Length: 335
Image 1 (cartoon, rainbow, N blue to C red):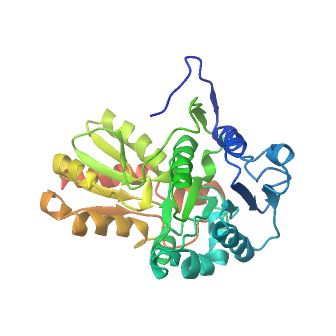
Image 2 (cartoon, rainbow, N blue to C red):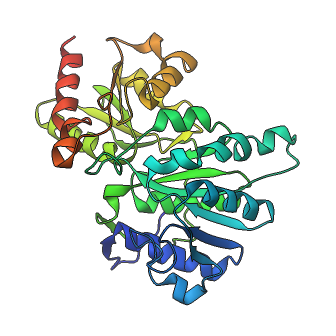
């Protein structure tokens, strides 16, 4: 559980991570971090700011602009017993390092019958922002090519910290996708950063409601929460669920419990149509047998079938916005 001092400050999301990484490197000598701009400037969003000077360039270092070899370094370090955090600067560029992750990292445990492990943590950031190349959410590509890795999609940096702690207790590889537009959003600073754990595969109900179940993750979850607050004002009581991890996904079928109560469900994310929202739909409708509890047709609400357009318009119109969510929910309530 999270613990807060009585006078716990509200800080920027990147400051939560920075304080956490500082404590982590001070207490776990096996952890190293590297990637583009990670060392000298402390990463593009300042999660490692000041830490190279404190812990040395052997532990926190810069690399060349080549995702393929960054992943290769991570694999080698993980095989040698270190706990590498290998950074891909933006999620869009995971594509350039995908091959060894899919072919080597994701398969190691399976093809060695559990005799070898590759506990690499790939740290990256993505989702909603402004621009074609720094706003990607190719989640379908990731979950379908990286079975064998954990895929963590925390809604904020405190939850990310809890997932890092859980991953560092395990012997499995993972990709951590932080919310790119969350680094300067304020969060309350916990006092037990090193002890906080977020279990993987356990969704969290972040808003309770009786009328409709809204399932999402990451940056889009915040927009879903805003929509739910608006809907409450017009008499629609929405339940909002943060799935937290896509691999594993809802291992105890807790989304089904919500659906039994509301009998309506909408899966919302910012991947292309047929991507991760369709994956979540498949999990709950087919694997969990959710279809038995429906009063209206279940829906997915996704981004458009293209890279996000430029500037604020791209963030707003290429991906689900609050009005989109409200409109679909109203349609479902009227069905």
